[in-house]
Each structure stands twice: as structure tokens, then as C-alpha cells.
Length: 358
Image (cartoon, rainbow, N blue to C red; front, top):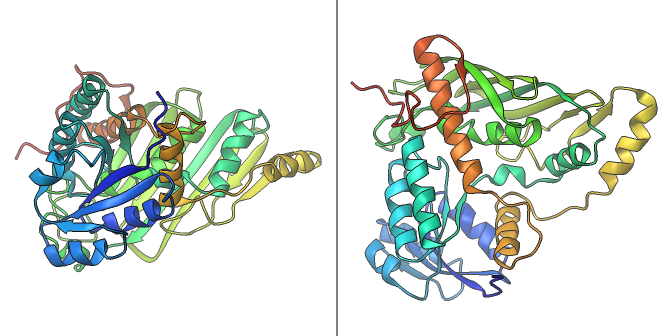
């Protein structure tokens, strides 16, 4: 049933939670941030001052027991995503869960099962989808102008050093759950599957070359899609300049993003017709896509439409599981030094997780 209420929200975690505050405040007609919860009371208080009648608390149990709160945004370290999401769902809350959605396919399936049983919405965070350039690409695909997908190249070239890894849980299997393919490139890989469809097999080389950490910080990935399209993804946390870049070659058009590191969907994209005479048709179709809210603002606007029963693109639990399925396959491929076929089910090696046993 459509839910037209202004949803009362608790943000759990005041780090990346600040970006969620931005998105929620941009959608005051749909959401009200009532609570910010963080073990650091000062940090919670600072973020809460940006809201209206927003409390700052440190007691998670009290948040989950509060019947006035119907949506929680989990912005906590990755190892806490699954247990806190399950507790919140069982407490009758809708849940928005930051990336990574889970640290194993088993945990992803557990979360989905609990959400279904509780009849609550569980929404992974993929805010990179919400930008004009990427929506224009999806429009070309949907109206049939792009043609068959051929080849894509992705670059996630970021810079992470001692200051980033000074937080004790980062860079560890126990705390962060994985390296750059889990925590940094996961967004562009989500965009890839949106544009090119399901992935049929992967190969992966992973390395730790930039920082003295447990997990990977460099990756060279090769992906084959069910459609036959091919993609490569290059990831490093040791770049001098931070950039994200996506280039999609279709039979009729080549689309290339800007270089904005955290907002590649928002910066202007280029769309070049393979046959120059068809450029006018491409440009006319692009002009039909009106600007909308972007990044976290666009993500929450879309979630608000979904709650209200209005037309929404939506980020689903299927998308969240798919992102973890890909990470599982990539770690398996790197470990075995061979291609790994997808999709994966409960019998797959790595279903319970990819962290080394030692």
C-alpha cells in the first residue's frame, strides 16, 4: 500500500551519515531526521544540529525500541551492517544500508529473508546511479538507440594513505571485510551491471601495493556479461589524482563519464554516435531527460517515491545481493587464478565469505 507519511528517520553513524543527512534534508516533504546515533556523542551532536528537532543519542537499543522511528539509515562500519540491519528489521523499521550490503552472500540472503518476513523495505545505498549523465545513458538503452553493449572500461583511481587507515577497523578483514573491490569500486560495478546487464564470468588479479594493510588496494578485473559484452575494471588507492571514469561502447553510441571522483554520474557525459548521421537522434533523446536531484538527494527522492507508490527506479535487495555476489566471485577468481562463472548460489565456494581463513 502507498505510504504517504513523512517518515521519521534515525541515522546510525555520523561519519558517512553526514551525506545521508544532506540527502534527507533535500527531501523534507518525505523524510524527517529525528535522531542521530553515534558512540561519539560530540560527533552525533554536531550532525544533529543540522536537522530540525533532531536528537543526538548514543544508545542504539533505545533507537531501535522507539516506535516513532520507522526508517533507519545504517552508516556504520561494514562488520555491523548485517547484525544491525536484522535487528532493525525485526524491530519493524525500514532499513537503508550503506555499502557494502553484507560481508557474505549468506549474510545478504539472511537480511533479505528477514526483510521479507517482516514486510519491511531493505534498501542498499547506490547513490552513484543518481546523476543526469547516467540517467541519459539508461534512457538511450531503454528506447533502443544504444544498441547492443560491446565493451566497457572502468577506472577507480583514488588516493588512500595513513590518515584514512588510522581508523583501526579500516584495512582489516575483520573490520572492513575486504579491500578496494568491496569498499571503493563497488559503485562503478553497480553502474556497469545497470548498463550492461548480468555478469556471466569474471577473472581477477588483486594486490596490496600501496598501504601496509591486510586487504587489497589494487585490482585488475576482467568481466564477461551474459549478453556477450566485455568489461575491464582498473582499481587503485595509490593514484596521484583522484578520478573515476566509465566508458561504455554500444553498437550505436559510445558514452563516457566525467572524472568526478565521487559523482561520476553527475558531471557532464559525452555521447558520440558511431554513425555521425545518427548524432541528431541521440542528442534529441538525451534532451528528453530532465535534470533531477542527484547523488544522495536523488537516492532519497527515489526512495520517497517508492514508499508513496509512485513511479521509481528503485534500488532493490536484488541489486545489493548482486553487488556481493560479484565481490564473492572476484575474490574466488583471484584466489584460484582462474575464471569464475556466475550467478552463485548457496552451494558456491565462498558463499559464507571470502576472507582468508588465517
